[in-house]
Amino acid sequence: MKKQAAEVQSNCPTCSTMPSTEESFTISFTEDWRAPYLAFIVEGTLPTNSKLAYKLKKTVKRYFVDGSTLYRKGFNGEPLRCLGEPEAHRVMQEIHAGECGEH
Image (tube, rainbow, N blue to C red):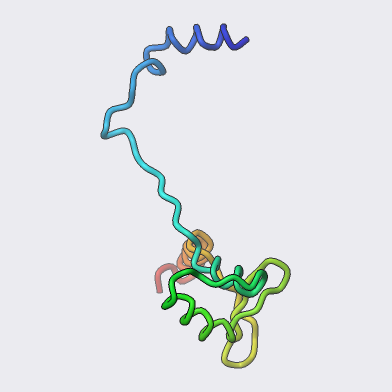
């Protein structure tokens, strides 16, 4: 089966050509902003950078974990779920696509 698939792919003009630089792209992974908070609350580990560790120690009092979800304590004491970038974009799109549109 592998040999047959390799023959088909080598005979295909689309598959056998290398993509040009205009067609190629890069994927970069960035660390989620919630990761240091979860690591400190769950495992007790601090970042190696002393400034980031100081900031984390100072602000971690406002956060707590329920299950594997990070929450922040709101002004009224209500839990506010902390979202990552993709979740935040999805929520914003849902809000702006509501009845009033972009208002």
